[in-house]
Image (tube, rainbow, N blue to C red; front, side, top):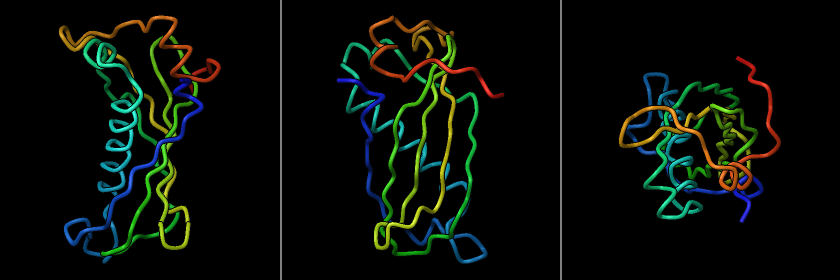
Length: 141
């Protein structure tokens, strides 16, 4: 299965604790949702061996906030893998209000693979790299 061509969805609901002083979902909650979607996608698509030998740390998050979300709303998190460099993998995420399909936010995150035993950056073997990313891209940061 080509991970890069697979879009993964996670469903969630806005809880009272997600709301900030302005009455809508706090920015940190969107960030949490981006991470939850990424972790869920990796767990679904990677083998047990891959999950044991590769951990991921964030290098960069970019989130464009487009519309607010409010308590009680159903939310769909859509994520997929983009390009890769030798040190990073790009992950794209859309946060969508399930009721009307409105995109609330879009995120681009760069993740670095590490060895979970040492915490050091690690290379990804060619097979996983081919399955886990689209064509390599130049870093934009």
